[in-house]
Image (cartoon, helix red, strand yellow):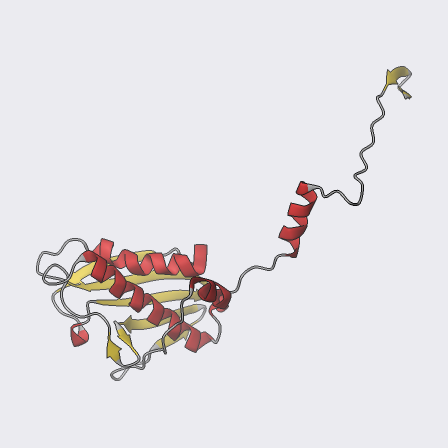
Length: 191
């Protein structure tokens, strides 16, 4: 085929760019599946992971489980209490190891999410986890609190994705309520 541009003669090869209807184009199909795919809700993500949140624990004293101030939801310290039963007790470094502490921190993280869901009605209203403050029941001189609290941090990111990334403190203490292995406080930003 001959084409003229600004007085110059160009020869252009003619090639069909039409794809027959019975053939699929991978780029277009990928784009269509991305366009049609709705983002996963937090409840769907929990179901995909096989996680069922525990019943939100009730306060054991003269305080509230959570309080929203502006767009921040403050959550009181969550311990390893599920359905009225302690799941993890004892000191890390004495009779308990770091893996045990990480499992305890995961229980606390799930309790924090249960309280948030109770307060907000929907975890999709959590736009981000701002901060976790973790306390580890450890022997005097225990210095691996960050490794223990990773159990909670990893859980938040596993469930909430990037919304679960947060600032954090992790400290060892010589005792916690009901001899719980871990206690964690949280601050969530709410949409």
